[in-house]
Image (cartoon, rainbow, N blue to C red; front, side, top):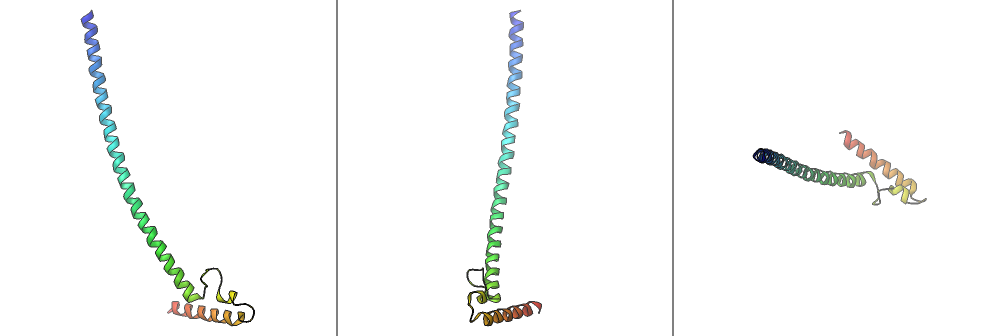
Length: 109
């Protein structure tokens, strides 16, 4: 009777050890998978960061070009005509309109 209980306990211990090994293998493979996913996500983040920087630089170049060609002031909110005051306002607005027409003509060519 004691031998039967010992044998049952030994079988149970072997089964538990196999399950423990199976669980350890499962978690180990899961950890490897998550590390690969993290590495891929970090690479994608780096690529997206570079893309954002390129787009920001492109945006700044386009804003400078627009300001130069379209008569915008440095503050980016008003045209020279709006900042000129009452005496030069009409002349400034005419100059801005002329610049815009030239710009549009260049773009249409």
